[in-house]
Length: 114
Image 1 (cartoon, helix red, strand yellow):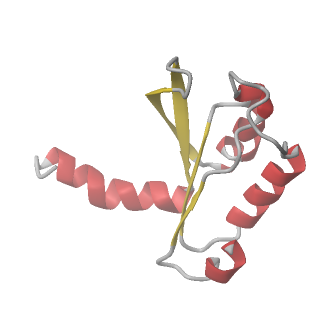
Image 2 (cartoon, one colour):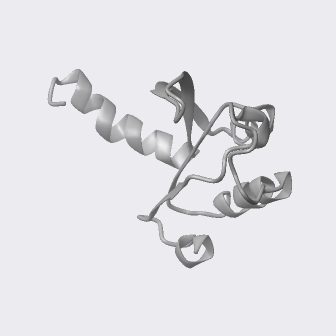
């Protein structure tokens, strides 16, 4: 699916991969566990996208090495986990996504429009 839209400059790809086992409070939450290779493959595919990309997950050394080292911006937000506990969920914005938001959204905040 990513390859289908990778060359479309005005496409937004939102990826919500299975959370890494090391970041979940319930380590047995998935019937079929994904591999670290899947997360690395997803990152490699998203790096080819000419449009905009956002990835959600929990902070981890792997995502720091993949996304943050490649210039993606992490944005953290407090959330309630399925068990009612408090967690911090993160979004990683690709460099192009971050730049577009800086041009469009942040000036609207400064002007009081949103």
